[in-house]
Length: 181
Image (cartoon, rainbow, N blue to C red; front, side, top):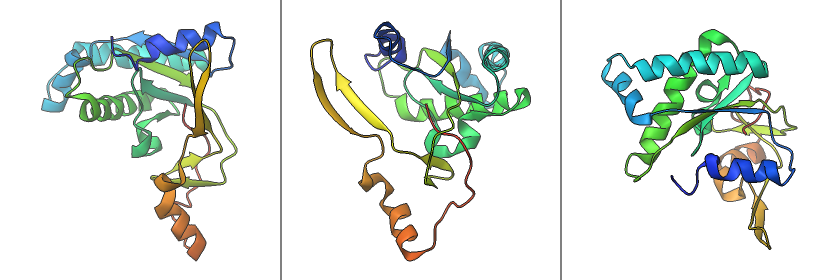
């Protein structure tokens, strides 16, 4: 299993008693979904659409979709946010496509889809086609010590948006509510 998989870290976060968005994890075969990019039928992709729709119904809309290795959030809300059942297939397609582009050279690619409660965070602006940018932090630790803590969104990643805001342009003003998980 890929050492960065949520299948490894998510249970540890739960065990530590830390708050996390409600999440339903569904194992899948990434390889068995790839035929959709050749315009062919994929029973695994079709199965996943139904599972994702059922998970969204259980959690409640909107939901955030990601794989165990990452999300397609840099492609904007169309690639991660499911607002209704009929959007599950297109968001799933975008997520699988994004993950294939990111991990096609990896020995072990994505192994699960995560349907998560969509968090509506206090985000002063949006970037990357509509991602709400909130004050979020990443912490890296093991059971004995914390190694580092830093902002989820480093200023260098947001330079284009920050420069436009300073000039008063404020790109991406279609402020969509919500945030990534």
